[in-house]
Length: 251
Image (cartoon, rainbow, N blue to C red; front, top):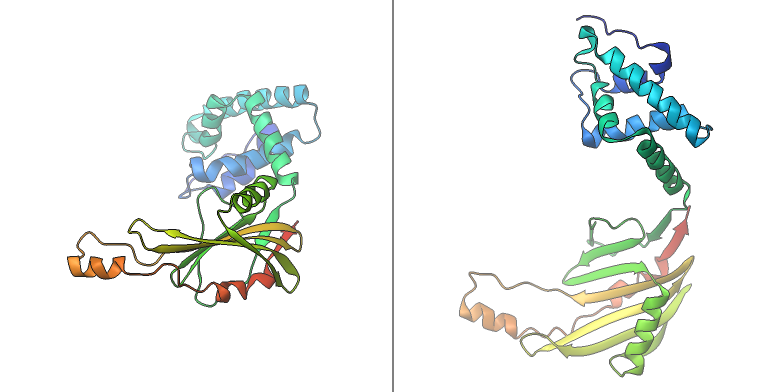
């Protein structure tokens, strides 16, 4: 196998990228951009924006000249050249700035010990500041409580839509809201939610009965049995037994 050509001096900071994506590990949009941006961030660290932009402009010219040589036709840095075609030095610097601000921002984690045999789910776009899990026939969601959510809960109580009671789970305390309405078949349907003060902040918890969903091939007899299910008789106490473990951690 022929030995890879050495990078010019001003481009040697890109060598880790070549090493990471040497054959057969070709970079793509999902795997290559973040490592490239990290190297560019180090390259311009501490420079004023005008100097950083000028430096990258000169690096791009040098990279294109180097890649134009026949011996570099399959080099992984062609990926970088492609990025530079669609993103100007100013665009890249803005991206570097935004990534730096994001990394500097404190990270918030919502934590809770889940009941045994609970199945946690991750939703697209939802980070560590929310929890969703299923336990038996219940769906439970937790999210950090906002002022809007507090106002909404208070409004529901004042309108008589829900009953409210004070609750205490060791160091966790707050209000429990519940009501019984009708499902689409006219059967009772219970809903329960909580506004809780936990170590580190406030959390909203919602518990809803899921049960089985009707199947397209269900017989009429099976559907009649399904309609008879009373969705107001489920017990939330096994979930409440874990509320003392809820906390918000900021790192």
